Length: 154
Image: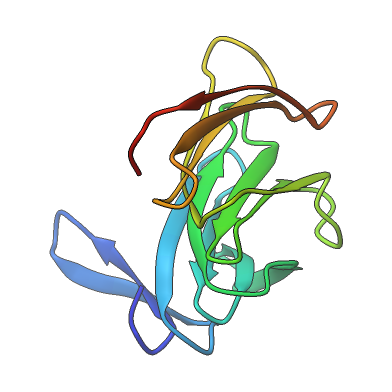
């Protein structure tokens, strides 16, 4: 992603741009591929998460964040997308329903680090910034916070 809101898809073998997406109005700070859906998720300073199928140029917009989206991660089965923002929000989106997050929670700092458990369906870990200093664990199927660990650092 670029500072102008464009996304370049590159052919790494031939070292050339094969597709340009101009779908955001501000800096694109994070990207996440979903190979099972042929979808590229992008997060931007424009506060939007967008899902694009580069083959058809179709775009879905997820609007919930109030500030820059700075973290994206697909669940291992590819059905859910988690997004974190500078607005301190963590959202979990069902890829089939883009209007509202299926889960959302507020942390004490920007949410940049997000990881889905490869061993337990629906288990998500995320970390906030310096004002939070914690790793939070959520059951995204119920929305319940399971635990948090004070790391003493960002």
